[in-house]
Amino acid sequence: MPPIPPTGRIDVHSHMLPGIDDGCADLEESLVSIEMLKQAGYVGTICTPHLWPDMFPDNTPANIQRWADELVEQLNERGIGYALWPGGELRLFNGVIEWMKTHGVPTLAGSKYVLTDFWEDTWPKYVDQAMDWLMAEGYQPILAHPERIGIAKLETLTKHLDALTARGVLLQGNFRCMTGEDGYLQDQRVRQFLTEGRYWLMALDMHRPDALPSRFDGMQMVAQEYGQPLLDRMTIEQPRRVLGHIQ
Image (cartoon, rainbow, N blue to C red; front, top):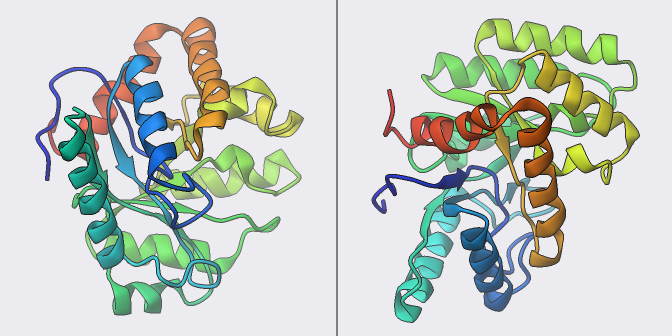
């Protein structure tokens, strides 16, 4: 694992690895994205490709480690100073526990933290089952962008989120939702969840370089509306807790 830079922002949710999901299409896009991230104050990224066998069957923890190592080699050859770690965004589905038993648990940078998501418009039983299994096995699950879950009634969504967080699951919000580009409901919900203090982390969830400016805009909106200390906590301090640098 690369050393953890002592200062600067670290993105914990990123589709940086080239050509393996709906993120960066090739190495050039990855390199352009890294340059843009550096200009925005980022010093490192946890690469979290989609782990979803129905759509990306080759994406396993072992392959992601290899692909991350290959991208690190490309950076080293070019003399680009930027830290990268392997991870994954685990799509929760019926059978995901057996998948993890077979392929391994996709932790963030070899830590105990596991980034998860799901997109259904109802709350499936397998979400709670997967979260409980992960915690029973000693992992710390994080649910990505709950503001984007398709459950129409906010009351229903927050009831389930309350139950999850009461059991110890952490929540990660997306900066782009602040801009309204992901939809009106997502714009409203991300602000409500920020106001209520639900998020442990905020992340860019970057895919390709042309979509990064709007994510940076959302980051600045968080600083303006909720304060620089909160932004710094969720992009500087908490990522270092994920990486084990802060207990």
